[in-house]
Each structure stands twice: as C-alpha cells, then as structure tokens.
Length: 125
Image (cartoon, rainbow, N blue to C red):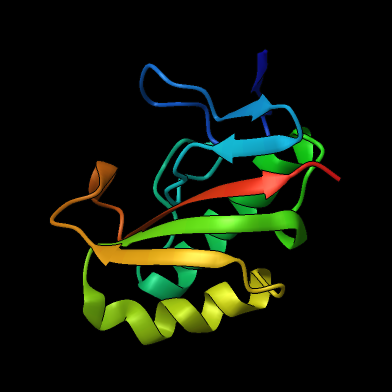
C-alpha cells in the first residue's frame, strides 16, 4: 500500500504526478526543479543558486513524508550541462552529507528551462 506526499513547502506538481510516494518505509520523491514553492517561478540564474533551491524543495518533500536528506539512500541527478558538474557537486555535498548512492547524467532539456533536477529515495526516520 502506498500513500501520496503533499506539502505546500515545495512546489506543486506541474503535471499528473505526486510530489512523492511512501511505500512501506521508503519515500520516493518526484524530481524537483528549482521552482519557488510560493510563486511557482524558476529561482536562480546559475547552477549554484538552482541547486540550493532544488535541495530545499527536496528537504520539504522528505520532511512531509517523515524522512530527511540524511536518510537518503539513492539520488538521481539530471544536469542540463555536464560543465556544471563541479559546481553542482559543491552545493549537493552541503545537503547530502551522508553520501547516498547516486547517478548523475546530462540531459538535453529540463522542464521550464531548469539547469538541474534531482529525485531521491530515502528511508523514513
């Protein structure tokens, strides 16, 4: 049995999906792009600013589900440009201090012109 995660502290879904799903003791977040949860507008002009917003959005979704970034076991990261990899990693490391398993790939485009999108699988605490 699964349950949907919903919080107004993260951006509302911009399509037919949930912010996250809880299955048993695991939380699966949808990919978060750097949308400001209050305005729904893309926040940040560069990879550093956008990665901070993405991580804050993920914190909000995980918190609403009874998890946190520290309980993350796997992330999947999408970058618009692999040239941003080092700057992305610098910010990412500030939030994912427990170093979960991770995949990171470059993609052609992301929704709303975002530079970064991240999804997380975490254990509930």
